[in-house]
Image 1 (cartoon, rainbow, N blue to C red):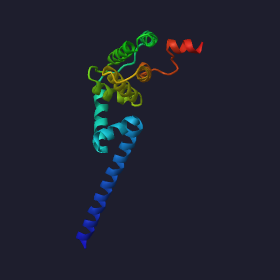
Image 2: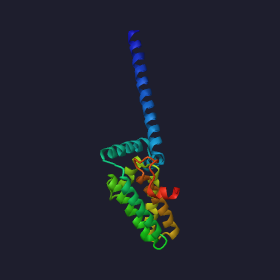
Image 3: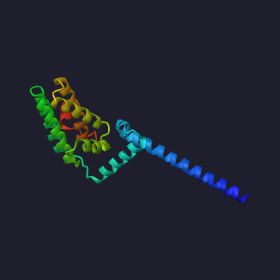
Image 4: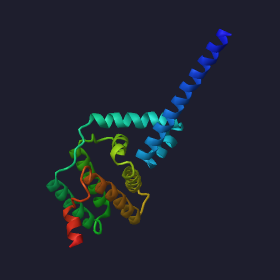
Length: 191
């Protein structure tokens, strides 16, 4: 009788531990899905398994936590925003060059904020921690720009690439900035 009570007690403890582990896993999954949004689904699709994708997303977060990511000073933000406006204006006359310049400007912003640059896949992974929605735009722009380099796109595709680059550029420019602090361009548009 005593052995039966011990076995039942041990079984209850094992079930309780398993239930707690399952609940913790669900909470972790929900938090990752909420934080990463579409990037969560992209990772699951890429890894083919939810657990592997979640481990990778947690690892990305750890890698970014080790970096010194910092917002740009207001004057530098305004300067870079002005440079973006100039690149965007050149698009009409030279779309290919404007798209290349837009990408180079994005790389400048990433580097100045503390993100390592040079490998697109690494840039995307690290950016996804603070910019999970905008990083989808970066992928799309990169794909369109690569297609253009291979001669497989039209000017409209480059226009779409610029729009995608712009979405990430705006998100990066406003890292750590209260939306109450408008850029010089936003002030011009409000006036």
